[in-house]
Length: 415
Figure 1: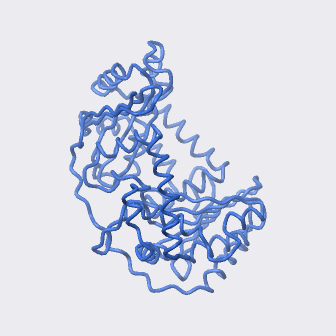
Figure 2: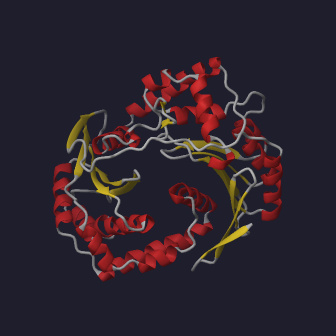
Figure 3: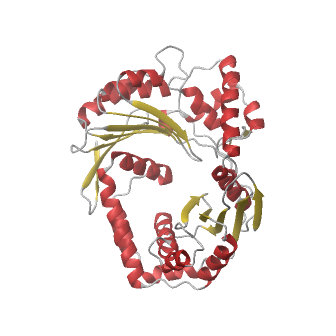
């Protein structure tokens, strides 16, 4: 096993690539009792056009549902329930992750996780039955103001990149999915070469690695051929500058999104700098936040979200309240008059570094961090503290000069 020592934190993450291509990451914390394990394929909703064929939106999420349906009992929920653990799964734009959390029987539970995810059972009847369940889920999402808002943000900011589409798909998409389509996607993307396992908690790393290797050595897989994914030429301009959507919401919701091209600099560092900029300008300790709360324009701090669509960032500030037009004007003015001081930057850097350090006290956060980093660029960086420390006010202000903050899209939900 290779040891990745996180500099300035002195935490160790162990890594090994197995003979079949599966990447395994282990993090041991002897001071906690629980274990949290994730098994991830680098396959999410945006990979619906590959090898020259287009698949319906929502097929990755549909596949997540069907992987949980095993031919023989006990089903995953029943198995983990018997061992006192819990299990779940989720699909994002770039990955699908299966997990369990529990104190005991970690080796047995890991083997079962590997077994059920690496063994799909599909029938035409079960696929048709699942369509009704997912249709209900879609209808629920279509009734939730938060989901309506973030779907509109993406559609109004993104023109051609599949990030614009819902992860779950539409009812029309779901109706068109077949057993054969699901099998094609499963066998193309659910291969050890395209997957990784992350184990975090209190366990014997050598014993766990031995069990994982034995489990995988008893299985055979076809030769892995990476899929040829479609490339997208996303334009700089947003699709729609402003939209007001009528829906069933008690209080209006506003989202202010900026579309920013990813520059030819270190991408990880740029994303950290974007976070620092918007936290300094609009975070809960900013003068902006203090003044707008004092004037009653907002009651809660603006939420911040950064969506990385590979060629651009979609940065969104969102809030709830009746005085959204005043809020939009205030954000406009703030983005025209930005000053990042040394004191502001150093204070936020210290907070960010502190968050990085304390995240290792939570095994779920460590696991999520590893998953996010592997999906980001197939690495677990050991120098993140140094990267944060190296950011200067000059770099931040130079970055600000290169950003067109007028390339924005605003969505308002109201009755």
